[in-house]
Length: 319
Image 1: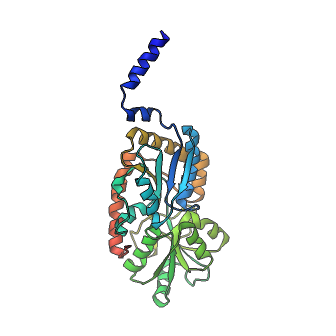
Image 2: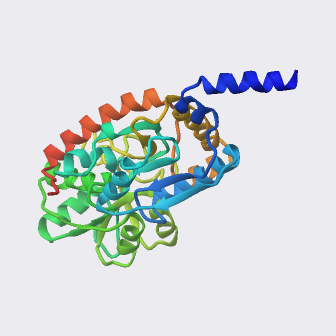
Image 3: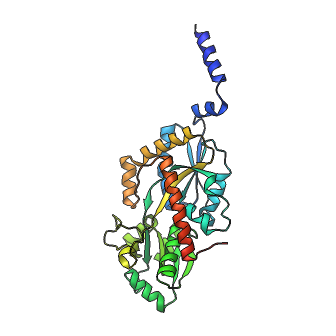
């Protein structure tokens, strides 16, 4: 009787396509998450928060691999070349949606990936070294009209870079000089007065704000940041309707089986809503709203189109 049952199972399994068998066994080996930015960046923080818990829930090691460079393009290119089997994932920031318009040849297209989950979002923060004689965005713009200003950002193609170009060059009609850094080094450069002004996502700036090494000027979202309630928005500072943010989201190579994508989406949503994870996110002004892969795909189309307009209006371009 037992032999007959084994024979029946073997016959049923033999009739399944190889892809279906792989999905049923998923995951049977370690999973790699490629991070498109260096350690210490918000993208990296989210990857490690999720990766550790994902490994526990799936029963496999999850390896976080930083592949920074070219505003996130290097990591995206590496993930694009990976097998579409669910064992390589990519986490990138909004720069991924910006770069397809900003760079002439980013080395990937959005069609090369399937969205897994729209992860946490945060406002971008315009800040300055305490020595800068400006405390508001309008004061900073007025200063830039009379004094040449260099500003640092999280890197070419990041939304902090695009926001500064949009606000100063396109809206205020003021010339400023961009100095690209990585997300964690940009905040440190402003704190050290290597550049007097800059813009990054909020998380890398938090320790410098707490220590008084930088002062906040404005946040880019429509609503004020919960951890910086006294800091005005760009919209409140003379540019009504301005609203931008940075997201840190998960993707898989195009062709990854939908069942695997759905499972990863479900697991990541659960992880990002765990009390200890939410507390960590809250402390850095990272906000997470659950979504399906389909909802993220629809939102992504809107984001790509919106950033294409911003790139065109700001005049930003990378060859």
